[in-house]
Amino acid sequence: MSLTVFICALIGAFVTYRATPWLARYLTRIDLVVKDQNKKHKPLIPISGGLAVFSGFFIGSMVFLFLRTFLDTGANYQLNLDNNSLVFLFAGLISIFIATLIGFLDDLIINSSKEKSTGLKQWQKPMLTLVAAVPLMVVNAGTSVMSLPIIGEVNWGMLYPLLLVPIGFVGAANMVNMLAGFNGLETGMGIVYFFSLGLYSYVHGSYIATLIALMAFASLCAFWMFNKYPAKILPGDSLTYFLGGTLAVVAILGNIERAALIISIPFFIEFILKAKANFNADTYGVYVNGKIRSKYEEIYSIPHLLTKTGNFTEKQIVYTMIAMQFFFSALIWII
Image 1 (cartoon, one colour):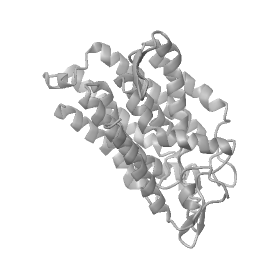
Image 2 (tube, rainbow, N blue to C red; image 1 turned 90 degrees about the vertical axis):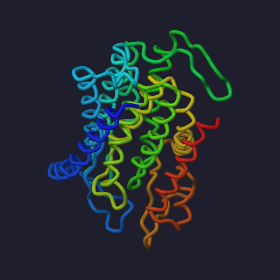
Image 3 (spheres, helix red, strand yellow; image 1 turned 120 degrees about the vertical axis):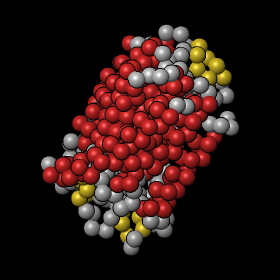
Image 4 (spheres, helix red, strand yellow; image 1 turned 180 degrees about the horizontal axis):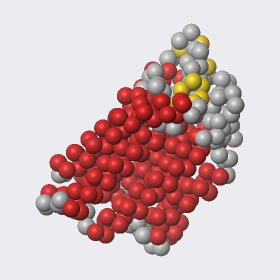
């Protein structure tokens, strides 16, 4: 891979690193804050840090495109990004932008008690994220031949751009949003699966997916410094929708749907658990003597397996979840 891509990723990370503190102060000033539910005194923390992640991701991508367009010396062609690939790249960036914007709109709706972001209605989220999939649909992004676990290769023809792409994008954008609620959880898991998908796509020659995954990985690493426990800013739905949208774009443009499905197994499990509670259960718990205890008797979220015991701190829960994501991310090299 060309050095140019790594430089652009570092630029994106730098932008996110510099933008996050400013964004945290601005969000606090406009009172876009919520209570950190897993802390003793539930301090008010600014929400919607995903905007800073997207800013770094977008600027890093734009710098790459600028260098590719005006200062190309041949090194960038190591990524084999022809003009047709650039059309797909722009479509992917537009889809990710729309998904992030939808997440931000979701963050803007906060109840008066500041307990949490009440967000958009359940039926509104898939409808809006369906709009975000349109840029990928109109350029016929991806390849209709998919390699699926167990089944093998399947050629979907026109059903791929017109049916599977919107279903996959809507599903990915909304599923990441379900597994959240602890300092650094979404960011840490995102770092793991984008690193894994970026490396996987590069090995398999899906260079456009490599570029997008690397930009996302770099920006998330910078944001981690502010979102890890104890968080100075919360990611909000602007980040979870960014993560889900980017995950879908990487899978579609890189033709690595099989790997993306394997990596997404924790989110499928979370969907099933949340469905038991009609998607009304919170992932986070209650602070008790430095540990986090679940608010429910039943298991309605993967972290509830830990919080139900009341023996784990927030940091321990997050690192356990990241380790679980690392396990499933490693499976793509085996299955």
